Length: 173
Length: 360
Image 1 (cartoon, rainbow over the protein chains, first blue to last red):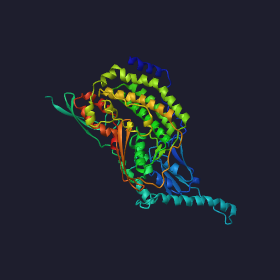
Image 2: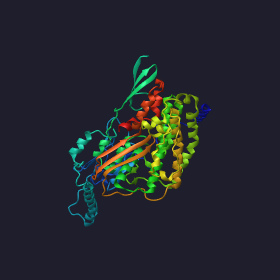
Image 3: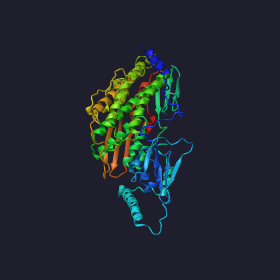
Image 4: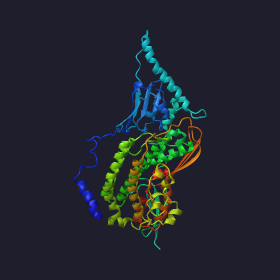
């Protein structure tokens, strides 16, 4: 008697708390691995632009002149590809989604200006600056190496190209 | 002779969340002919292969379908791995199989819910989706995503799942069995459900073969075309036989899917018991796919086909995905002929249509 069976299930549910959460009163518990949104520790970023080149949806724009790192929140598909390729590991995928909005959110992070160096730089400080610079140079060297020699595609990082691509339809839209 | 009328079905229809349009030629409440048309949500994902490098393309291919997304990612990785002649570590193959079978459980539970919704059994629909939530939670815990996992990559998988966690998952799924059988008994035994399904839209084995039906649609007609038997992933090590039914009606197709849910739980338990330790991915450096490769995958909805053509550069020349719904539309049109107008939603639902997959 299947009617009784579903009846049993329905009756059981009547005396149980709801299977759904009372959103937004009860906040959702995120799992440890939940890929919610991309966050950046901008002070560690070296603006190498690898993340923007590897992003499948071109959601990330890196402007080296203005020292900004911009992400289109609605374009990001949370694949964590940028997190994997970041040479400084300054990108993280944190739990919790971006807050809903009626406009296409774009978050821009500006790299803070480094404190102007005093004229007489202490040798110890000069040494401390070097590894970061070496890292930047290394990351730059790596980036073009990934592109094949026969590759006819222009670099995505150029400003004009990025603007053009911004108008193209995105696969996740 | 009764007058013929054409009734449009879709692209917006209460039983279908996805846009397929059928022109139903009706004579006295009976469908004489059905003319399908698709093309409402073409996204051009295959074209994106020219813009995305092949390692990143997997995230695009995963989005071909929101339900069998893991399978699509795996299918793409399989063609590229074949192209590059890369051997995937066994642990990665087992993890892929586990996720793929979990995907099958969640796809079939979703489908059972939609079917219940289609014939107006709302509480059954709610309970199917409540059980599906358990599987989605497992996905979120192990991969970080609920429906799009981004966990498969060319050469292996991106995340490992510890053995204790796998055993816990097997325990959770085993615990689901009681409630699942309670739920599926309603689908298989309830009089009102049977009235809507038994004897409706019969597709004979020969018709299924001739029209190239795939997946549960074909297996409901007794045609064994389970691609898992081809021996990819961890399937060669696992003990299973495809679920076959002989009747070929909506009830048989429903029964195949119900049996497959339990079969998937069995397969996951076997995988968890047998999973070897070791690496989860091989690194591929300095190689780009060149040449062509064809791969096949058994998605929850049936056989999917993947083709890749590389040019030795980081952008592939061509990707082609043929999804199961595409193969099942001829079978659908065949079964629609001669059915009652009121049964059309049931028939369309029982091929488990995924139109956005079909159009990619």
